[in-house]
Length: 534
Image (cartoon, rainbow, N blue to C red):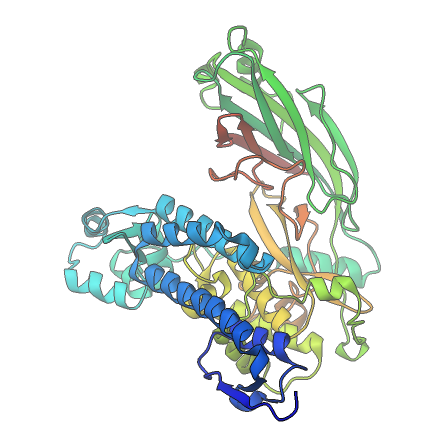
């Protein structure tokens, strides 16, 4: 090929990053010169036709990506859905990662449509009942500073279903004018100190915990002999939870989760006999449960014979954990390990956006110790992110949480995971329920971070937020690497139900509440949960 003229093409610095990367992957070794700093690629003439075809493909992909972002920003969700569907029809031209991102965007759009339903007039009226001197200027101000959240959905301004509650959480002025009392202060250090004291006295704090899941699924409108499929939350056996025992199951044929499953769910299938379903015994039971710690129902007579009822009661031993870690003891990672690669990689749920990368640099600063880096990330989230109701967002979940400094327990743990992975620190999610001796229980999720030689350690920035200014350093950073025994762990990282669910759990079902479906689609779980700590 000597003596043939070279054809030179310069790829602009603003080209799509994926396009620039793939240009190098395809042509490196075939090009005469490649200059990374200016994205300048010089190619020999025989490659021109092939190159032109590739350019056309990637410019088209880049244009469509820009079009999709523009549609989402303008709130033209119907057009965005059509564009995503069009892109997904050509899956052979997309990577697995790109497909997952598009599918996530579709799910996010569907969730936003479900959750952002309130009109301006409805929100204004409800706020006016609480803030008598409310004005349109107040509404404009709170919308501008994102205290009052809405999306434009196909030309209509729609507000989040819990936007008023969240407004009072994130905007102190609005809460003051509405005379909303501040959160009740409770001794948040009680259970951490109990755990710390136990370990410092060379004993393990262990508690016997009882859990009851009772389900009431309406079957009156279902055809007779309908096959119902169900996934019920169950304790995941690990170093914190052991001696698991199923005390009662109203279903005879059930499948227990395998020990190596990352998500722990009981599974069963049941053919529903709508004509011969009787709940007389259940009505008597829920009027006065045999277990004293299970709360009686206020109106058990309201349970009709068109309701399918099932109940599962189990117990387990739960251990607390406390370790005073010396950062100098942290050992280097084996970066060739597959789990290290898995839990430091970018995913559709943990994108390494420019905003998060810049925030990471700001938080970590010049720190070089991985343990101290993760600790700084934990502290920043505890001090800066206010707890609000969980909500769907259009865009990256972690970036939303960081930018607007709000989110629920899942949002906080997701942000922690993203920032750790940006720093090449393995991190993943964990979740289930918070179960406390005072009878309080709630769905909860947190993160895990991996350090050698300690392996996986729990990180709960939601519980930690109440302690982050505590004068006792042991308490201040307790939830960075430690835990009380008052939890029910159901899943580690993976929340995909097994066996796989045919329909997406769009009605709130999942690893924490359980899930139901029949051939007609997903069914919202109607569940009553009771807990007891012995």
